[in-house]
View 1 (cartoon, rainbow over the protein chains, first blue to last red):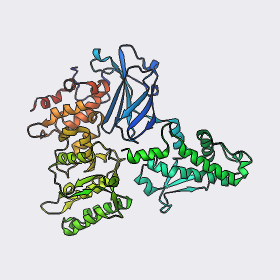
View 2: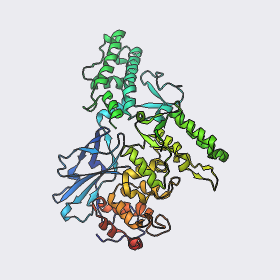
View 3: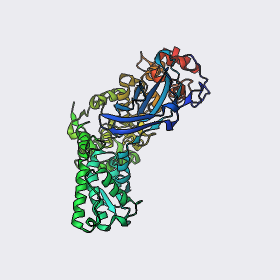
View 4: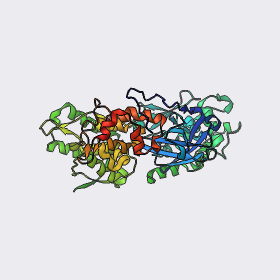
Length: 268
Length: 250
């Protein structure tokens, strides 16, 4: 390893002609991120990466000076990865490197991806799209949040700007435990109050997506039938049932909102 | 030594702290560290409407302790927080800034007046990657968490100097996250005998300075070499000629 760099060379100059691993060929999904551990799923297109017997793949993750590295002994199976040390809600950068096997290697990288960010799991995305679409406002007084129904099909969730500045409201387990069940209750009751059939709700609207979310994700909950849409008491019960199931649900198969909240309080 | 429970500002407290800093900055006469100012600081620190105990009062701190440099300060704070991630604790970090304000503010000339600089040195701006490392309390903690004893390379200056060097180096991920790279930097730029960085280590005009290593050379080498798996000597061998003098200087 005695290659000498010239002072004028730029940081982007690829002087060993190493190849690139395309970003679309490597993908990291965050399954769960607790205070203790980050669980990710790595998927690689091994054919495109052109991994050979004498080579090794390495996954790296970096976040504010914290480094994680895992050599993928069997890349086809090593896709469930647990990482310690990254703070909850941190957003590390990932990189995949292809290296010669250690014994024969000289430290030179054969190919590598650029740094890329992980994507959230489908369930997390679902939550983000439905519940966590907030509008920050400084005009709702000292209310922490408020729902505006000017467009009944697309209710807007206003969150107090001062509150949002203090908490990571999209990711903070404490905020989720307190806010989300109450938000769900008000949203469902608001929809049930304003519509008398699902047929009257545009499928592309936010209100429709809330109902579909409950129908799909809350196992024993089902959309009110035609008759039930006209029974306001029954609708109110259905809204309560949805909130109960939502609070009982173990998100990503692991913990309820309350359990996440308690881990946040006592787990760090 | 008087110990107090570490507290944190709430949103209103943070605003009051910001107003307090602005007042000291705009009116240097108010920054005279006299009984009146001390009383004002005391009231802000322990006002129940503006602050509350951090983690139910489970963290104590010696409020009268004096520190020789940021290294000693970071070591002490690291001893309190250990590996706990505190970077998002804006209220607590700002409260600590007020607790140690007489040490993290330089005196103006020979006077007893505190020189208050930009707000982000006292109230962290976590989401701003350029200002993140300029906080005078947070950075010594983060550097100690990351580098432990080796943080002397970056923290040998007084508490009131945030230091261009530390910000430049801490923000370079492939530099700061690599233990071997830190050892290389220590070997090149740290005077073990005097226990401080060699003169001009961080000077932009000096060939092969530490900032150039972190800013230009490490990203360049990282492109083609697996520096995380390289030994210190392998990395030293990869460095261009401009680093020869540093390699040979004792």
